[in-house]
Image (cartoon, rainbow, N blue to C red):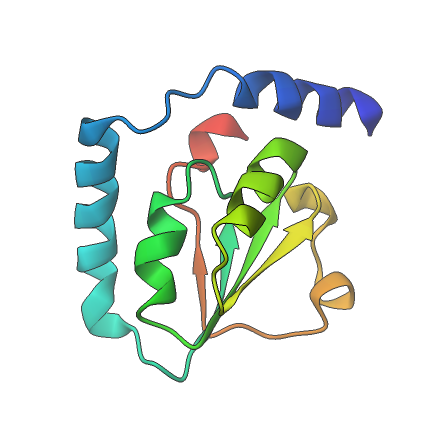
Length: 116
């Protein structure tokens, strides 16, 4: 597992952050989901990245658990001070109901599958 974590940490360092194009695209993606989301929903997000998705989604649902394998991304997310967002330090393949102890109303994998 250390090799996988090392890889994820290395890939994370290549991310372009704060790109206006990325923010616009992610915002449009979230707007596509918005009509299907409710304030009572508990959701799982796979990956945090720059947090644009998390920030927008968190205002639309009750709570989001973010599964993230990159410690730097988790630290950045925790610094944002989201009231209704929790971070799970795990690789996606290790995520299970036994880990989260929850069932979710929605699962988001935005810009994630191309990295898996």
